[in-house]
Length: 302
Image 1 (cartoon, rainbow, N blue to C red):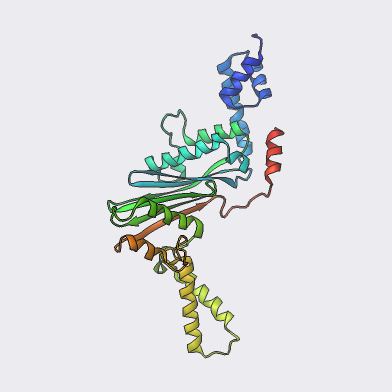
Image 2 (cartoon, rainbow, N blue to C red):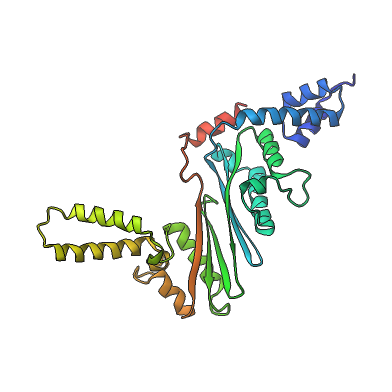
C-alpha cells in the first residue's frame, strides 16, 4: 500500500472540503488511491448528510436574480449564521437564484431534479454534497418567479446582508420609471413589509376580523351605533394604509406623508404597481437561539 503523506491528505482535503482525519482515513481505506478516496468520502458524506437532514435549518440567505423579463427570489437555509456567511454557501445561493431565473422550474420538486449549467449533478445531489462539505443541514426552502410584459419593469433589493429580499414589478413608461426608483420601491417593501398591493386585495375575512376587533375596543364607549360605524370605517381605512404597499408612506419621503403610489406617479402618472414579493430568512420557522460566539466555538470544535 502506498504511504499516506501529509501532502496527499491536504490535496484530498482541498478537493473535498472534508476534515483532515476523515481524509487520512479515506486514503488508508482506498490504498492511497486519490479518486477512490474522493468516492469514499462522497459516499460517507451522503450518509452523514441524511443524518443531518432532521436538524433545523432556520438561518441562511435570500438572493434575487433578473434574467431579461424574468425575476427570481430564493431562500436557502442553513442551521447557523456562521455557515450562511461562508463563500461556499453564498455562491450556492447565488447560483440557485440565477438558475431559477433562467430555467423557471415549476416548483421546488422540479428545481431539485434540475442540473445547473456546468454541474454534473442535480440540485438534490449538490445540496447533499454541500451538507457533507460544511457539516450542517442545508435546505432550498422556497422561490418565487415574476414575469414581465413589455411595458413592465422589475425592482430588486437585498437588505441586512441578504436576510431580507424583495422584488417589485411596475407597469409604466421605461423612460420615466428609472432603475433607481424601482430599487427604492423594492427597498420600501424590504423595510416596511406590506401585505397587499392595494386595499381591494385585502380578503373579506381579514377585514371582518379587524372590524370585530375595533367594535370590541369600542364596546363600552357608549357612542351611538351610527357613530361607531363611522369610527370603525376610519380605523379600517387606517389599517389599509398600513398594510397596502401603494398606500404606505414612502420610506424615503422626509415628510412621511407622501404615499408610495404618489411617489411613483410623480415620475409617470400612468404607472402602477403590479405585484411584489418579499422573503425574510426563517419567517414562519422555529429558530434555535444560539449566539455567534457559540456558533464559532462549535465550528472550531469540529
